[in-house]
Length: 318
Image (tube, rainbow, N blue to C red; front, side, top):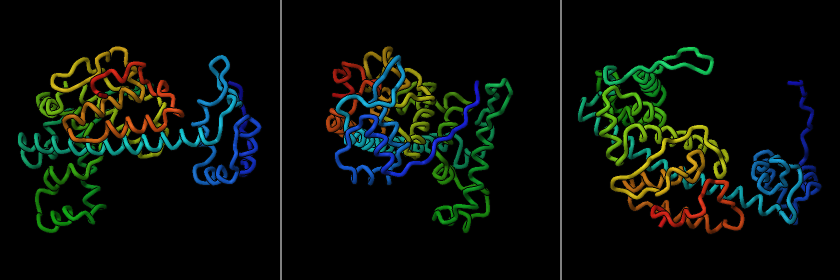
């Protein structure tokens, strides 16, 4: 590959506006556009400009389609922000439910301090892309995290209470320890329980096979991080793809799951809607999502999100 040195200079807000206008973007209110750029940044907004640019041989040109306005670009950005907030709120509810089931089921099988028993976890050996072996030891990971939290998170009332009152065991019981774990710890715990019946008990609460449930947890954690870092969500192609659920025993699922693009947002929205049927049956996620899509129907091309043409016929969205 031929070396190429980056030589672009930073532009002022007015220079950025002029550049966009020269490329065909209609900006009626310059002052408003400058205010947006000073709060959001040109680079972040540029991702929302792509759907409105001309395309030749599957390559985007630095030229906007006829009639595209600044308002359309900004409205698409606002839609994505609202979508992230909606998804993040739903994931939070699911995270609480998963956390609760892990604590409840494993503590009733193995006692209050199951997280301190290395025998219930398996150790995985994998290879990286270079073929080098590495080990995943969930037990050691969560022990290290708990110890760090006991030292650094003493402002948490229940940690302070435990450390002040009890001298042993060193770690608090699972209903305290798991509450200070991150979502990725929950995903790793489920995937690396040695006894398959342990994860089956948790996944069955959601009416799901254990392997698919673990895959979905992994994707939930991935999308949660996207939302937490305010990254673009609406037309993203996921790097972590959830496994396919072919059928559902007691809950509504999409009929034609074989044709669904599992790396797109639509399939993930179906996952959230499906899981909430157990975790929060009265959730307003579905009506809020439908209202959001209706509000921005003139701006958002939902095909970019993987929505099939007949998605409204699916019972899960009715």
